[in-house]
Image (tube, rainbow, N blue to C red):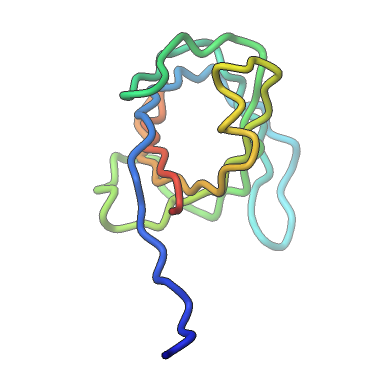
Amino acid sequence: MAFDPAAPRLERLFRATVETGVPLSVGVGPLGERRIIPITGGRFEGERLSGDVLPGGADWQLVRPARGEAVDPQSYYFRTTPQFETGALKYAWLNDLVAVCSAARAAGAVTLDFYAVR
């Protein structure tokens, strides 16, 4: 009997479209410009959960030199590892979930696809 680890697989959780406000530049450093992008709203939908994205959050970015034009999402790496926390019993399964996210940016919004790692 082999004791090889099981290969992880991804299960789609939901897609979120997050609307963003005007970036606030914190300054330029050796790695690029640091910015805070306010989250102004949005929506997420999936099989097991859906709802509205409330305003009030923010995305903290490090932006390397770029010209600001639209770029094909296949040509850049935009990933994150979200963590969820909820006290709602209906969604308690999110608290122990390992998740990954792939995203694409556009003017004024970001589209994010969230996946559970199984």
